[in-house]
Image 1 (cartoon, rainbow, N blue to C red):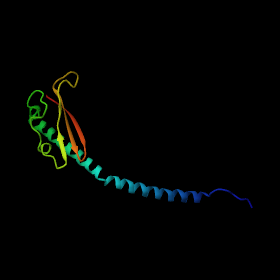
Image 2: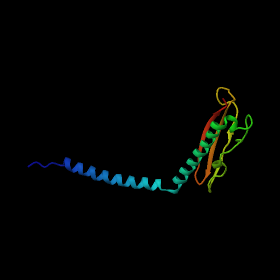
Image 3: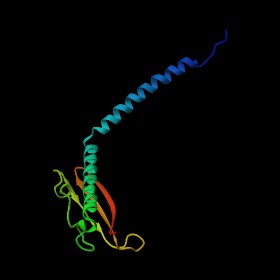
Image 4: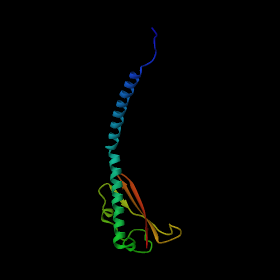
Length: 132
């Protein structure tokens, strides 16, 4: 009778199945723990605040035109700030700096508006707004 050394195909398949079940369990618990961590939650809230503030500026641009956001040719701060941007929730601060000047092929009719959210979490959104 010949003696074969090694594992059979069935044994190898069973090992792979058991190993994959253990690995998926460990990865699932790790990803769940990361998603529920406070730091990720605060960063998600900051990103949502920045997006909502930026949407407020886009809405002002659509309703009032370029002058609905910028009172002078190139101010350092917006003429009107949406309510969410001026009164953020506790633990967060929102700044809206404007970069003025030629930003696109030497054309000065474009301003870059950035919304920065800092505090418990941080996020930033930037948009190029044109006067047309």
